Figure: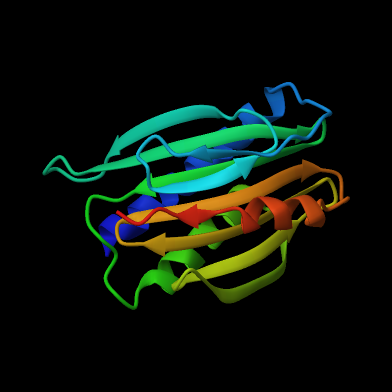
Length: 183
């Protein structure tokens, strides 16, 4: 359980660091959604532009267990970014603990953005897996996303934007294009 909590907090810290990086990327005005398959062939999702990949690996135990992150980032426009995070845990999350892990993720994101409030966080189903569909918003930004766990992977796909003009139509297109790849 400590490994899972540590992993969730490290994920939240990575998301915060990614938030800083995201703000520095140049945005493109034209949207031509193109499907992208992750480098590990776990899932596919359509991005509005070719995403940049950021990889990180963190040692989470004295036995050498690693938690790895692949973060794909692409600008939606000047004020918003699309992101896909794939976190690979050293072991699968125990059946029935997925929702607790997703709630921990949401709490971790909120703890790094104390001005943000949960507008909604609904438990849903995506391809047979429990997911959390959520919107976090502050007076200056929003974070619209879905997160789910499958085996030893956590998938977070989201749009983060400046201001309060939520890109719901773009989010529906982005999140609707997400699919797990059966191996």
